[in-house]
Image 1 (spheres, helix red, strand yellow):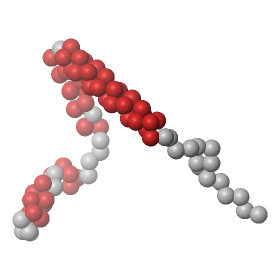
Image 2: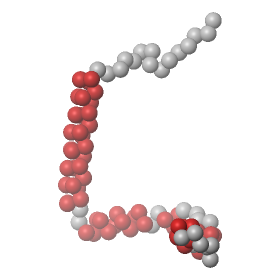
Image 3: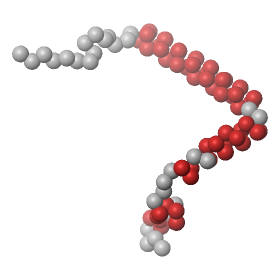
Image 4: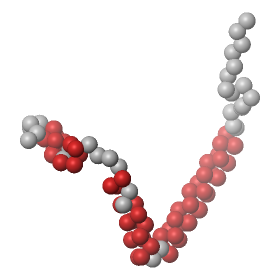
Length: 88
């Protein structure tokens, strides 16, 4: 005898009112998070913003790039494809 187990055996679909309450909760969370982000950005000093940007930009050299990426970003080839011309 084969027993089939389904992931939703112990779950039920939320009712429409539960779905609406869940969506309302997410909308409120989105607004609260947006307000939090706006407050943090407003309070951010230029020095801290520059330090954060520098910290992020300093991570770039840690990634190993193939030699082909060091000499071309692919943009020239992409533009050639857009214009249906052979790449240089």
